[in-house]
Length: 212
Image (tube, rainbow, N blue to C red; front, side, top):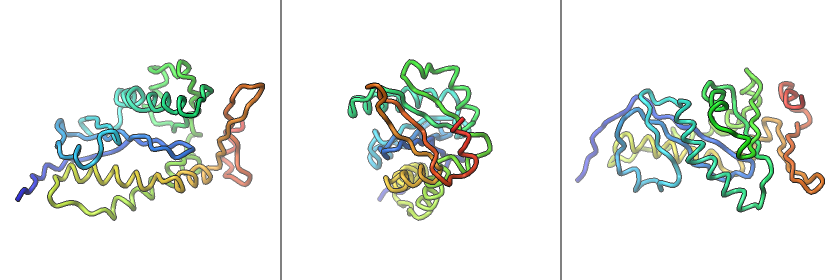
């Protein structure tokens, strides 16, 4: 019988993204070990996540660039083909330092992506992920039991991906955007598809930032 060696890393984190139609966008998983236990590939399909290595398990600007190039932009191209839509893509981000720095590295205009930063110090009111996904993900992660025949690293990565998958259900994602007060719609103006960000009536005062 096989008993895994416990090579526990100090930190494993994830970069996640949700979209208004709740399609799954593979997260980038950050580990601080230089090696990955290969068994993870037989536990979670490789197209459902992307592994990146960082000495402290944190998101860096270089890894964010890789995520955009290997996941976000290819996924966006597939969506454009699927929905026959070549108009503007609206990307909401908070003011994390790497999010700000990536603006000088990637030419978002080239991909017709409009980046809108969430108002500073208002993530608790405006960040959909914070409002209805991350809290749910933490509860889901705590409820998933480890497999004693898998290594500590594999268990932690698989739990993280599984919990994100469950937390980012269509119902939760829709509720997340509704809770933030943002109503994202697409309208045709003179035959040109245009994205509008509306503010839900009665939303938090900070949401008015988006009307400016």
